[in-house]
Length: 169
Image (cartoon, rainbow, N blue to C red):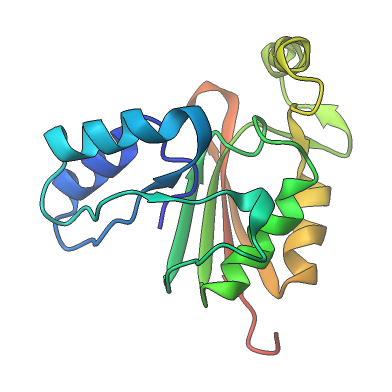
């Protein structure tokens, strides 16, 4: 399941490249209608119809059972308070692995000047958004039984974080 599918570009690309994947796109608000239209027009058969999923309403939303959650360029857009609800939802849908792509800070420090500038730009648009501290994300994940198992540098000053569900949680 993809959280914050936006235009559906990742769903289309990944399922064309990996036809054995079953992909569940999701989004909410202003992005949802465009996502539905793009998936109907462009996606292969292994992409399910998008679901409307509002993370801020995790207690009342139906989260489909999913082994893996994938989210690209979402954590820095959504309010920081929703990070906890994202991991709560992952637990609710019995997720075993979470992959999160985007920019992060380490020990409160930006990895590049461009990420610091990006953070200013984000906060000018929405004061609740911004580049997140990896320590906050990993602590939140741990609270919900997920352990960071990989932190991979990616292009354009981004990271791919991989969290796995721990056996004891």
